[in-house]
Image (cartoon, rainbow, N blue to C red; front, side):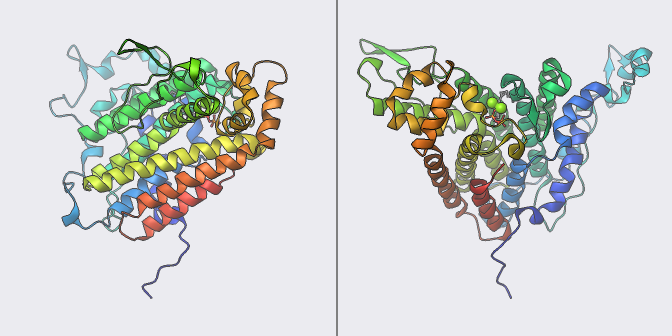
Length: 439
Ligand code: FPP
Ligand code: MG
Ligand code: MG
């Protein structure tokens, strides 16, 4: 009777938390401006996969099974922080130059439907209440809030991404840029980041604040690596005598807990194989920054909040990293294999955007003549079609799947450090289903 069913639906274990996710996020992002509210809540209205909060919640639950005596720092202040109304030392009623902020808001604002009580500095009022801690469940309020923060950061990046990628659809609806204009989509993304930052600060954990703030920077770094592809400039350092002079392109400073950088080579005597390897390394680092960073650093944060010891924290981080790399590789594969309708967003978009992701890199490995096309970002007539045919002929998609499988296996390996539990099985299930997902 103690034997658990081998099939565990990842959602069912944290279904209570998942069902309050949307409501809690709504509390974190409400503003006094009705249009801002509409734009910033737009992507939350259509059911996303919510895969990032799901990972945070399941991992938090799995971490709670670690006996308390095996933890470094037992969380003692988990109960109140996320609902704490005031910063110590701040007046309970916000004032500007002695006048209440409410008084300072023009009656015109009220005529325009702006609710003055919401215009107030959000730091001075509760940022959305969390339900009472369910003692049985083991997930701490801060960890729940972390799940909400992760989804907010992700959604902000999607609003910006759809502007950058000229997308016209997301989650089966017009994308934010189309529904509301680029300007409003960008501003709503910035707003979500601002509110996410407030919520991050309220977790009152310096390490977690650093990690989560870094993910925001990492997303932008990843996006820049994608914009400024240096496949043909893998030597990012020029050697002069015995001094290395860093160049502007491709060189990404090593960050906290991160995968390190593109190798430095002289392009004059670089072989095709070395060039391809450098391109793959660049691709993986870009993918880490763009996708895996948010998953890995939030997984690490969940572990830190649970008071887990360093080896557990490190494995949670690596779990998120491997899962994130797997996730984006599957995404890059689906761009070749699925239709717009199946994905709910434009498919076949990467080549059109000039992006050489794993499937085309595998084709290039076998067909060096694709190099110039990658270099000019498939901009000449026929390039996209030629590259697509080469991906097909060289099994680029299948090879990408194999690489994703490898990261999936590594992620499963990382999970084995956690005690056996329903939540761990659910994470294993989730990890495997990321590999087989079709959208
Ligand atoms: C989706 O990738 C986009 C990302 C994973 C990150 C995008 C990051 C930025 C736009 C930088 C700005 C960041 C913040 C925090 C505002 P994709 O375009 O490959 O996937 P898609 O097919 O879903 O569009
Ligand atoms: Mg995009
Ligand atoms: Mg993009």
